[in-house]
Image (cartoon, rainbow, N blue to C red; front, side, top):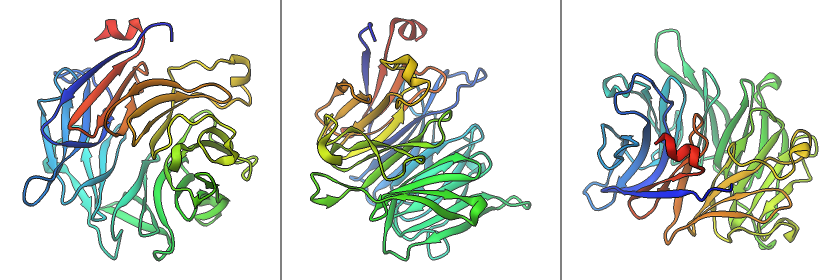
Length: 349
């Protein structure tokens, strides 16, 4: 990263909880697009919605989809944008962002009771995981309906905060009291591996907030959670996590922060400091954001590379899959930030 990154803030009228890049489309007259989950607590009742934003002017939404409650998870696939809420519902919007074609799964006894924190797309199906301890696989039926099938019900004994597909038949979940779990649908939707970690100086059981799985290394998860903890979990050695940052996990990794790590993603832009090892055993670079306003890249056995240090929480971020030099982040103080790394990427704007 020889070139200094550029950073631009775009104020919005509401708090920004989540933000995602939408798949690039050559037919979009507005150019590159973002989806943002926004929340206005000053309105009565509180207003929550998903905004479609042009990168050229994020302060001017192109369209909006109202939600029944605050968004707790936001993901996109080539075909649809999906948002989960604090009241346990799930909402799908086609890639055309035609609100008349939106479909939903209502919260309640038949789905989730309370916030759905984990959400991810695995091709034709989605996985949801909630604070109620339930896990569902959601897909379309032959008659056009959206059908949710319950995979697990923890009956409130443990709650989930994250979910991520690794393949069409495997996914990982994480949360409170259950650490990280690996599920294999070929074995009856069963948990086939689990890690219950103790971190945060060993005082409390850590909370998992985010999981990512690299597409070329589907046996390795990177996990972000409490007390600035980030670690890699390799299914080949499930009880020997590889610390990347944090005050826990035996204190073997330099902490990039000491607050909650809200999101982690493998960073496809940053080159590993050891190219030879990267092809075999080395954990690839990971980007994170935190409650205390840090956006940084962490790498195994290296000092963290801080990209942003904001005065407010960075609630979420996303790396543009088509242009990985570009990162969008949701700043708690009612704004979206766009970070561009490298001269080539800045020239594209």
